[in-house]
Image (tube, rainbow, N blue to C red; front, side, top):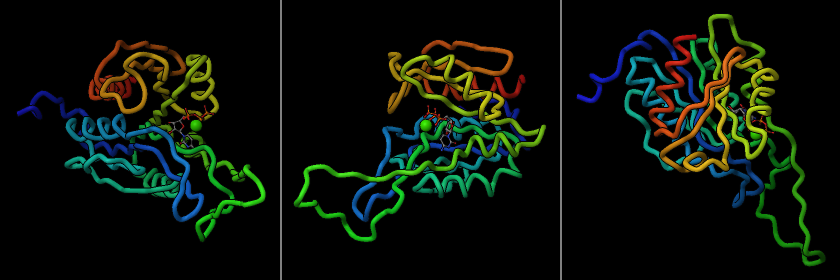
Length: 222
Ligand code: CTP
Ligand code: CA
């Protein structure tokens, strides 16, 4: 019955969504990751499906169940996420990217478990940059495609997020400040600001489902 409440205004549209963290291998027992739970991405996928979209969700490791009526592709690393997104980009009309993609990965992940060094109490893991998926899409998008990135900041949120919008050639950035009450990792709510080239709209505290609705509304009204 709940489905009736949703307009089917995404019918015929392909929406590609990223969600969750990525894990970057250090050795067979260790990895680098972050606190993302995937909730924002999963809620966005569920919301878009309810509005009639054909949804593909590319998800890093989370504890969330695959949403109904959504094609869910599970990946582990930033490189796998990049590959999965790039191969599905052409057929997508809208891309929404809440995933917290690792910015760095170990240069040489070890095949065997790394043992403690008896000669020193220090350890060093050399890292290299991962590919910036959003920037790649921004560089390769067609005029009929809409790309929405996210931005999580702890300071200078607006300034940093505006810079990301421009640098990555995104159509919209959903900015949130980790320090704001009700925003950030693992919460069921978020406080976001929708930033486009012409507008900067601060939304009140709302559930992640409501945030998804506001994002889609903004994209459709573009
Ligand atoms: N992103 C991406 N690929 C990466 C890193 C980030 O696609 N390798 C995307 C995220 O999914 C998000 C947007 O870029 O939609 C912004 O991510 P964020 O971490 O806030 O920005 P960065 O550009 O990585 O800058 P920094 O972490 O230095 O603030
Ligand atoms: Ca980052």
